[in-house]
View 1 (spheres, helix red, strand yellow):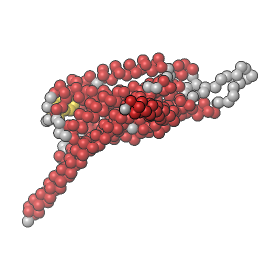
View 2 (view 1 turned 60 degrees about the vertical axis):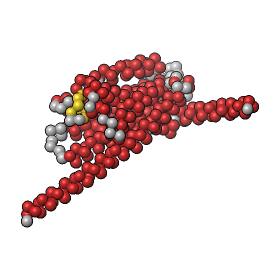
View 3 (view 1 turned 120 degrees about the vertical axis):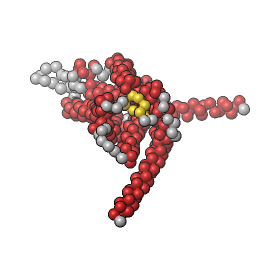
View 4 (view 1 turned 90 degrees about the vertical axis):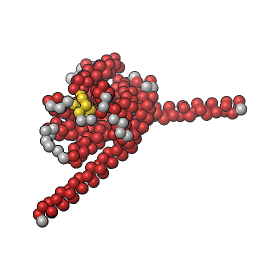
Length: 342
């Protein structure tokens, strides 16, 4: 009797596990197809519009806007290669990376590189706001177009070099493209958790708070020509409206960044420290689903940048509206000519 009860209980447990596995699998397929598809569409449109607006003379003179322009331009590769291949793999079962070794290595290499490059352009923009708001004249000199161009080139070179280890240690294991088992797997999990999850939001929050502190100090000290001990008047540091708006963009991006990226490093740390733990198929699937969802959130933060610009910066919004009005006025001018010819 006891054996019969035990067998029936085990059968029910297996049945429940199969049900949840099928349900979660189907849910992740839908997330891949529709969630990632929506992020790709919105991200491409947003990146294109951001590039067009940020390239206008009134904005591209600002070093912070140059970082945002570079970030928006490089996001195209991330959306149309990294995210697109992931959507095809998990949404439509196109498993090229799981069977072709060179594609496995190249795909993950480019994926990590072109997530890091636009992300650190945004971080450089936050750091630039700190320099631009500093009362130290030498620090303010670091917020310049010349310095921005140099850092943009350096960022484009630095991350492809940093991630070369992916080309060496990624391999196909049990039909999956993944880091090599053992020491490298643990190293890579901790490294990604720090590089992608802990360091970026920390830098953005730190420099955003430091910039906010500088701006508050500037407002307190902005009087019509300060004098010290009867000496010659000292001109206070004054930030333009454009600089203030660029800071607001950086500050809001820092908030969105922290909210959307927190899940990803938590997953990698968990995976690194539980790699030798025996896990059921359901637990493995749940863990993978969490990682998959965290990756969608990481891409969503890029897709939302255009809307952050529009929402935060009146100058960006004005330039966007001006471009639309100019485009519409050109069509109105062209249409009468077409009608007269007909």
